[in-house]
Structures are given as C-alpha cells and as structure tokens.
Length: 284
Image (tube, rainbow, N blue to C red; front, side):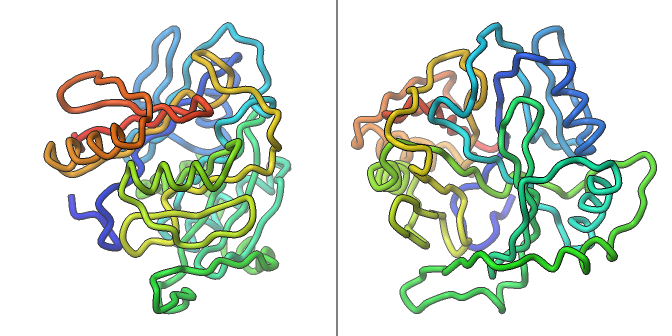
C-alpha cells in the first residue's frame, strides 16, 4: 500500500472497552452503518468495505470514559463530501443528537458520541489546494461554521444505510494530562511532525497530512490514568509498511522511555504516561 501525503504511517483500527456490547454494536452497525466483520461473545469487529475500523471489547468495568485520560474522539474519514452528506442526512433524519459541526479549513466535520460517551468525528478532507499550508510545513486549522444545510441537501436516502466503503480511520484525538509532553513523545516515537499547536493542544502528523494524532489537556490535570479494562479506549493501531520501519519506531519508542511490549515479531505496543496504548504493527 502506498500511503497518502508522503506519510510513513496510517491509522488502522480503534479498540474500545464497552459495558453494553449489544447496544454499542447496534449503534456502530445500525446507526453509523459499519458492517460486522467478526463477532464473538466478548468482541465485535466492525468496518467498511471489509476493512476493520472499530473493535468493541466487552468489559465488566463500570468507569466513565470522561473521567480518565484516553480517547477524545476517533475520526472516521469519509471518501467524499457526498459520503459525509449521506451519513449526516441519515443521522439527522433519525434525530440522532450531534455534539456539533465545524469547517476546519482543511476538512468539514460533524461530531457525536456513542452510547457510552466515546467521541466520534465524521469528516471529509477538502482538496489540498485549499489547505493553509505554511512554508515551514505547518498546516493551520480553523473552527468556523459548517455549511450544514448545503451538506444535508446533498445527502441521499440509502436503505438499508451503510457507510461508504472507502471510509477509514483518518486520525485519533487523545485526551492527555500534558499536551506538550505527549506531543513530543508521539512525535519522537512515531516519527511525526508538529503541524499546529495552541496552548493545551497539538495536532501532529507524518508527511504532509494535517494530523494523524491530536492531543489535548482540556479535560484538566485530575483525570484518572488509563488502566486495562477501563471503559473507553483500549488501544488504537498504527500501521507501518515493513519490518524495518517497525524496528525503527520501536527503537525510537525505547529512546523515549515509553513502556513497550512485543505481541509478535510484527507488532508491539507503547504505553504513555497516561496509560494510553498505541499498537504499532506491520501492515497485514
């Protein structure tokens, strides 16, 4: 696979610990239109076009995802504005509550939460020709009013509804205790670059994309460190093209004193100070 925007990574999958596996499965399958790729008593894997995107893992933990560091939102990147319009129309017609919407200059996005409070962004990228790309490589984002009516009117009724087959994880936005420290760790470990930073938040990416990861400390300094089984983010997956790149990322992670663990010769995890787990693997 040739990664876009001269990126050396791409985001592959987000895994969530959930209390209500049946309810959450219905939300992602019936409301968001992801297809069920694999299902067992304790886990459900959902995706689009046969590609895994979201894994739901049953947990007996009763924590609230907003009380700990972890996921701010997972972001599903739709292939086109028309595809974004279709799901936008689908959600509004069903009267599904949205958290908001925005024009970010490089993208158009709508925001909602699943049944347990995990944040979700649905977005489409605008053509690169309209991005605000500076000479030093920074890509400046804005938050302006979304042309919601135009997008809604562009949407089509699809029955039964299914999300566009080319949908993928565009980026993952994390809630952390110290955004500066987290940004530096992910830049140095994963080989990312700072694309846009404001007080208390950073957007970072590989290559010429606007961001693969974002980190913010808007939840404050008193949230709980993530532990195994806590409701919310279990882990997210970063894929690299080959074993050589994997070993390079591992060496960089070791240099940053992140907690690392090998699952196989083709996959390891790194855990940051906030207990957030990133799995890095060779593209399968």
